Image 1 (cartoon, rainbow, N blue to C red):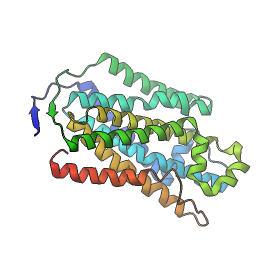
Image 2: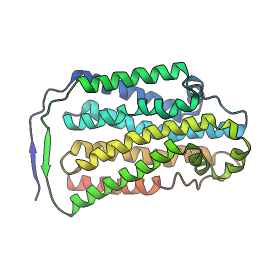
Image 3: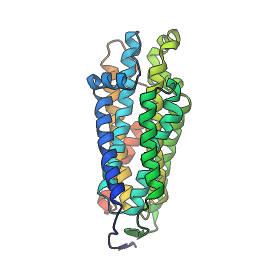
Image 4: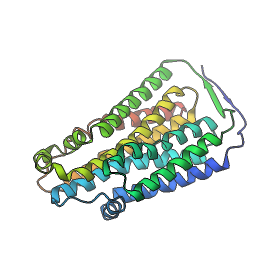
Length: 295
């Protein structure tokens, strides 16, 4: 038996609402600039990730951007949920998760480039705005919804969220701490080219590190949803839709670009494999949850 109590919506922080709107615009723009190759070339120049002279490596660089685009689409979903939600605890969890991206980029992404001034300035300003606002502004303590449930479905729901968060955490760790290893896994057919041009892999590594910071944000949000899987419907909905978006787009965008290059046999990239069962699992979970009225 399920007992649900709905409380009156509290007055939410207008500053945080404004920041959610700004984050949504940022993720939408970055999704376009990394997912569409003509825009990706502009994105590469903007962040000082110079394309390698080798044509195969240059093509691989734009494909690594295609790995970033689905993650930015997922963060866009989370930002929209934070913007539209009336649930204070869900908004706080989503805001904290997305606020991790700029400082992680400072620690990993830009460190690999030698801290270029323009990129470092942007990341520092964003980090300061997000984290100072988080420390100074509090959402109301009242929780907008509470659900007290116990049963097989709730146990399965908790296990599924925890498994997804674990997979994302593992992938984020690989992208951040072993970016060159990830590159070899992304493009198994280019291992010989990578070995012969080790000095030209810097931009590809930087793009891989950027994907790692976004994976960390998604993993963190999924862990929050795991901890509140029984009590916070808004978080469940946000993570479910975001997970379907990123898993589906990861299976579509990079794979499409990989197979479009004649002579490349990288369609069996090990990095793509975990996203297939994740996509299937999230679609099944969404269908069952929708039928049960949990989503």
